Amino acid sequence: MSTSPSQPPPSPPPSARRTELLDACYAYLLEHGLTGLSLRPLAASTGTSPRVLLYLFGSKDELLRQLLARARHEQVTLMAAALDAPPADFQASVDRLWAFVSAPEQRPMLRLTYEAFLLSLSHDPGPWAGFAGEAAREWLDLLVRAQPSTPRTLAEARATRALALIRGLLLDLLACEDPKRVAAAVRHGVTG
Image (cartoon, rainbow, N blue to C red; front, side, top):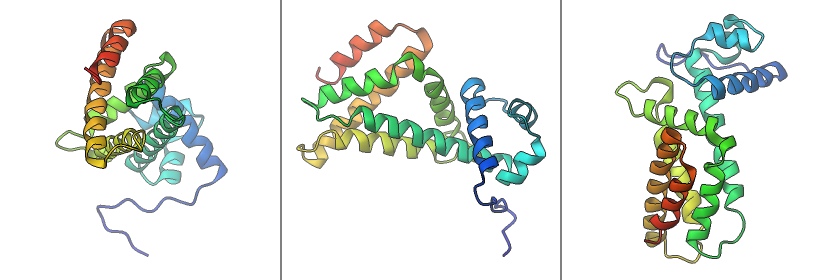
């Protein structure tokens, strides 16, 4: 089986070592972010070599794609759990989602998410290509599903407004760390 020059060779099937290294690389990414990411320090911090990472993941870009896919999957799974309880109303769902995503323990994930989101919107998105669109669709879908008795068009409009508000206020929270002021804006922003 041959691959085209523009596509990396297929990655070997998952192994215990590959999974272990993906976990370690993910922890490194949460701590250090994407900007200026180099294989040497990443490999050193995970107890391996750049050569092993390239062997197991095919390329640095493929490793990054898998790490970002994991980040999105983990975040959406946790957000879905936060929205799982039947809501009293849509605002209650938005408040629960906000409580989860704005919690201090979520800061590393938020920074990684926003960094990948913005990089995926650049002129040459590289391994981040599609991250913003996929993340937006996943978050939007969660907020639409939180409104089961609302007509789809209205649910999408309300979810889009809430998503824009939450994303903007999360950036504000990351920038200035004023959780009380930002949380008050969430409570007043969706319902008016």
